[in-house]
Length: 94
Image 1 (spheres, one colour):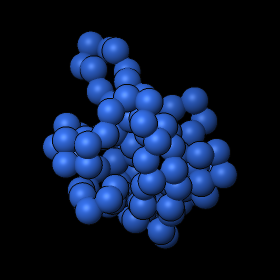
Image 2 (cartoon, helix red, strand yellow):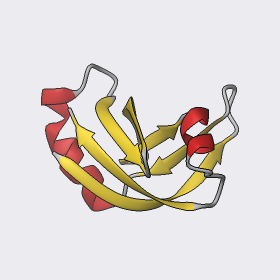
Image 3 (cartoon, one colour):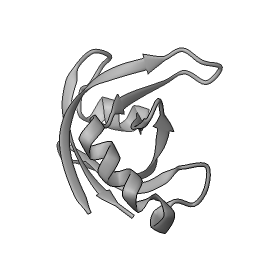
């Protein structure tokens, strides 16, 4: 399944700070339907994500009934992304 969406980058100030983009509600519901087939546990969904010309393998994390995409520093630097910026994401689920 391929999903394209745009979202705002936000910062989580936990014990291990990180940047994320939240998957929209409708797209999160579609992904949830595949969870039993693709998740490796804890609701984590393996994906290949693409922003601009940067592609990487990661996993979506469940949060508040939706999924969030973690943005590695190498991705943010390559695509010149920062907190509160809106970015377009392509996800290949599974």
